Length: 229
Image (tube, rainbow, N blue to C red; front, side, top):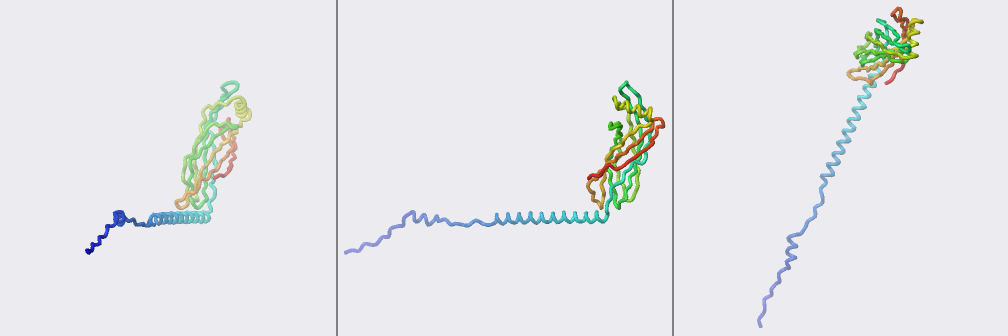
């Protein structure tokens, strides 16, 4: 009786292929999250640094201001000279006024630091009606100093109607007294060790009385209208 050899059956193809194509799971790396955390940390450090520098600069400026004790600028209309004034009726209900006046201003700086003035404009008015305007150029004034600046206002035949014309003719011919107002705003900044303070604006209001016959100023009264920042 013969014995048959044992034949081992080959493994299924699916099993073999599955052994060669097995998948491995790799967890995601944490590089992106760490970069985001580093960026937020840098932004926070920069914010704290700039905040500290701003507070330091503010503290230094405050100490300097307290040590200097700045005062408001003094800007006064010192002299007014009438070079010409003429009033001529044009119609029964209107008149024309021509005027040339020279104004001398005095700026006094009693501070320990310099003052930088911006360009200033002054308007001459009669009973609230603008007649002309003068300009004082900007300038720098050193500490503890007095400086004089001047401007000329020329009014060339400005027409006044009805009531204003009648009042002007009466004031000039009968009373020999024409009252004008000079108004203007002065902008100034204080310079402290290279730093410039916020702008300070002073309003000047002056009342002047002119005698047309004498061609001269008979009275002048000036004052500061207010101080605003």
